Image 1 (tube, one colour):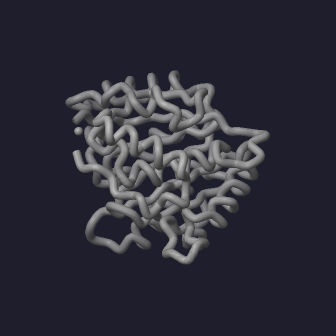
Image 2: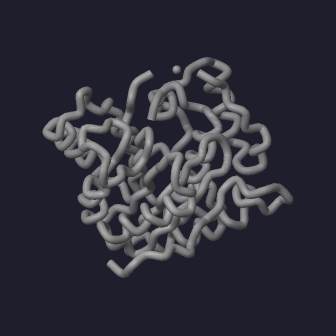
Image 3: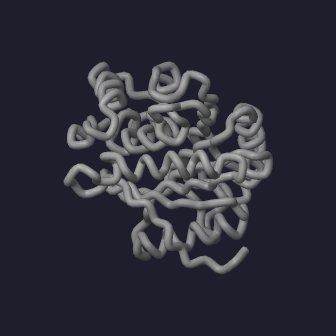
Length: 248
């Protein structure tokens, strides 16, 4: 995550999804899920958003992000201090260490765990997403599946951002990464949501048994909304369910 991306079209999809899963946009939010956000922050600020065609998805969110861009106040601090996500959201915004040696990296993740320990869902926002096996452990742009495991094991559901790379097809990459997460975490349920606006990206939702039913219900509502194309336009999101993974 970088400050320069705050308020862009990717942010709109990201916060729209998080608001849905936590219960912000639920007409009957009787049982909200508390959110934690691990920014995986790489510092830097540009490019105004162009998401007016998404106004039917979440007009309240659109207005707030438009205001942030208009005031040229594009930082994660603005998101943290604003009314974008639930007021009880827990944030960890320390920049990743540079250079990111293993010892410093482990310490950074320990602090992230401490800051988000009371959250029920934790969202991770690395620049490039989930690391491949060949990725160096010093990368500041990736997160590794084993770094996610302590969060899941202590009872938290996870949402992970991933940027689709060149080379293999998006479907192949998404399937392979889903399989890696299933093998490492053994989740109660995993969904992959492809976002079609801006650069190619996908969000992996790893549901813990304690939250699986609530997340599934809210995703079902998400599928019936303007986000997934019920109003005559191509869907902004696609939810992928047919993953061909070997048993864990």
